[in-house]
Length: 237
Image (cartoon, one colour):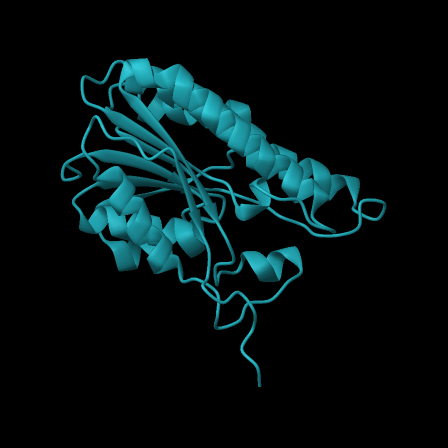
């Protein structure tokens, strides 16, 4: 795909890899609708990214709000790229995980992707150019581990959803790729109860991978990408 002049939607765009995705795309000449719940954070991203970034205060778990935004803002808009990046994780033993954390992960990591994708796909089907959907899962979508059963469940779900979407949409000229990143140095870990360290991947590195996947020739599809730090352990003091 030639990125210059294209239009993208990036969820979870207010920080972390979502902000880096938006920056990398905008630098390629893409108009980016950056979706997130925190308007103040989106405004900060716009100061860095520039006029190609359009902040959209939106909670993807609110289906009616998603529908209203698509109807209002995208009715006559061509959409070429959708990056379903918004994610939520809480860690804990299965018998101690609060129900609201379980439901929050399901709502954000699975329903949020469905609510937006179901409305964007018809726009992509009517687009004469090849389009691309990228779903951000996690290595937690490939292997289960103690204390992340809820997060595992949702990210395994993203994996299955992505494979099904890839097979369903490829006849319409819509690529679907699923990313499985390992640990990335973002605020996700502080929100989920963990911590970052210098051996984690950087958001910029993951964004470079996104650009590479999007820029592949139209008849070339990379449907899965697993990425990890070479040494995932914290450096010894």
